[in-house]
Amino acid sequence: MGVLQLCVIFLFLGICLQAQSQNPQNLICNPKDFKALEGFVKSLETVLDFWDLGNSTNCCNLVGVTCDSGRVVKLELGKRRLNGKLSESLGNLDKLRTLNLSHNFLKGPVPFTLLHLSKLENLDLSHNNLIGNIPSSLVQCSFMSKFSVAYNKLSGEIPTGGQFPTFPTSSFEGNQGLCGEHGNPCQNGSQVPRDSVKGKRRKGTVIGMGIGIGLGTIFLLALMYLIVIRASSRKVVDQEKELDASNRELEDLGSSLVIFFHNKENTKEMCLDDLLKCTDNFDQSNIVGCGGFGLVYKAILRDGRKVAIKRLSGDYGQMEREFQAEVESLSRAQHPNLVHLQGYCKYRTDRLLIYSYMENGSLDYWLHEKVDGPALLDWDLRLQIAQGAARGLAYLHLACDPHILHRDIKSSNILLDENFEAHLADFGLARIIRPYDTHVTTDVVGTLGYIPPEYGQASVATYKGDVYSFGVVLLELLTCKRPMDPCKPRASRDLISWVIQMKKQKRETEVFDPLIYDKQHAKEMLLVLEIACLCLHESPKIRPSSQQLVTWLDNINTPPDVHVF
Image (cartoon, one colour):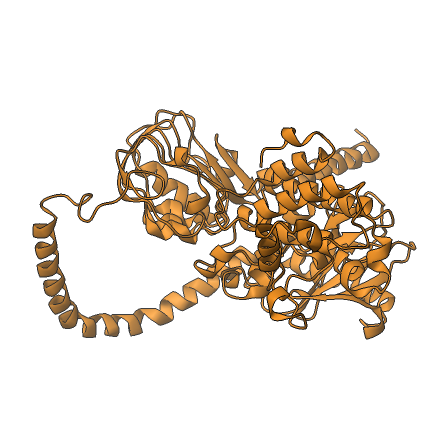
């Protein structure tokens, strides 16, 4: 065989190996996730013939397991005749988005450690033999949109915080011992066994003994801690170095090169210097927007394409590879009514997100800033904007994988292209900017005037919270007024309260923007007002889904009896 033929063969093999290594499903499973799945298997009384953890360290190839960049994001083992208890180690799958163990024979309590699954969106434990309470700590799973523990043997009060008020009653049915908003009314002591008083006494005795023993051993533990801490800290450092070794080249690359996703335009390789040049080193003259997540700059790339560069500042609470994984996930959200995330780059301690540029700026600008903006936005255009924004929101909530909560729907986050088509911006950024602070700052959970009333009781974002904020935007389109305007008389400073009061007085037509209100469009505007008020209902259960919004707005010209308000 000639030298040339050998070279061709080796080149072919190298390409195949490289392609295989770049496939996320072929990445070696993260050691932490592998250990968590091992603990899950050990807690079962069923032999998993379709799993072989003993002869493989790649859990990403296991039946029912889906990985993203080597991390387990889905565990779906419904109807597998599993028997045994749920292991607390499941709480260590901290990137898990879907956990489906329904229609099995699982028993014991629901592990409280599931609260650590901060990215969990779908939890289905229905049709098992689980006992005990639903852990109240699950209210901390703020991204959870689907939940079911139906047809188990659970008891106690159903948690009332977090996402739980938005779950249907069917999520809890088939558990005779459950009580609360979704079940039978709770009575004082009705859910407590008769021997609970004795149990409490025994518990008090045990606690007293525990305190005594604890005081006696605390000195010894402190001494042991001082001895072990040096060795353990050195071990942790070594493990982190080992885990980061394979990602170091990618991190170095990301710090200097612009990473483009889904490069349909075949954009040539760009580096940070190119972005600095096309923004004049982020000169103030190129700023086209400012929000809670950072400044936005207009830039023209070398190929003449206009883009918007959002400069994120602050602490991300993530490693570089985790940040890239989140950004890549957001880039996969592609819909005609979303602002497309094209790529990202690292700049010093900041991150730069590269978006498609929207020629006509924000809806907020046209309604409240531009002098002749309201006059140019006639009713047909405003309805078109509402319809487009609703489609984008429904895609985020229902079709996007994973589903995305926007968390900050407002008129300044609805951008308009050259044809005045609406595009939602800033979706999913709460996952990137310090995810453990997303329930504290109003910049992340929402903007004053758009925040649902339930967020004040439990600062947890929900899909129905997005719908509430969308209802405020509908009022802006109808009235051309800001949600909160301190310059207005006290009676009309709060747009929502003012509109509701005018409705009670049968003076609905007086709230409409006089520049667009006429007899020709009166029926449509009144219907949109009804839709807006439903979105703004105090009870999240009464509010429509984003898909219902699309149906109603797209069929606004149909006879009124088609709409069920």
